[in-house]
Length: 270
Figure 1 (tube, rainbow, N blue to C red):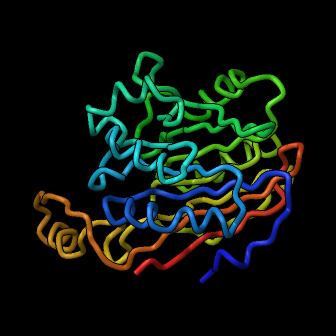
Figure 2: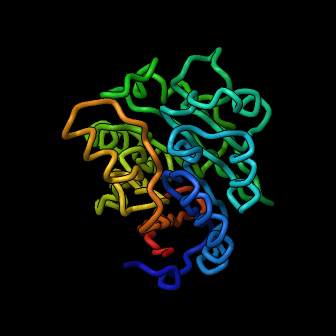
């Protein structure tokens, strides 16, 4: 299991991406451990996917504020963003939480944001896949327009590609190779072992995993899911509680925005 102390420093920018915070166990793990992880890795920007932070489905404004207070710079989301209606005004108010850019322009929130620290700037884009989760606008039809909206001269760009199909995520990685610093896949909650630097300098992983209870079926109590599969009857999902891990990736990039390293992060909390 990788340890945070093992990561080496290759300035000028280090990005820590925390994947799919799931329910209260994931939120508690983040708030307890993130300051130490930031210190030990020397990360400059922290991005976290929070689309399952509210009991496994969506995010609320209070939860979002707590995640930001814990040390996260930008929260990305995904296909469950509309599950908690209370968060809609916060999506419009805050530029530190984004929803998939390929939702409709009239929907609450924004699809990308710019995080600035001193003379460093990181653009973060959120995109949702089309295969099996039916984005309103296809990601390959939307991404060029979004890229054209970024400030001139921005070099460091991270895309959270929130998608079900591995093929769609892999294809997006190659489509954006050399155009962005990193394409990080989220949504399936199972960390993949295909982290790499693509030929033109983009860091890529198909899925960065899940921050939450892994003694579960992708975050949900095992007994509930097994009963659903066995009986085919609807059930009420409940967040599991044990086997909590913090998962994600750490990405290093040079001054021109080209990725120089990507490593998986997987830390046991209990």
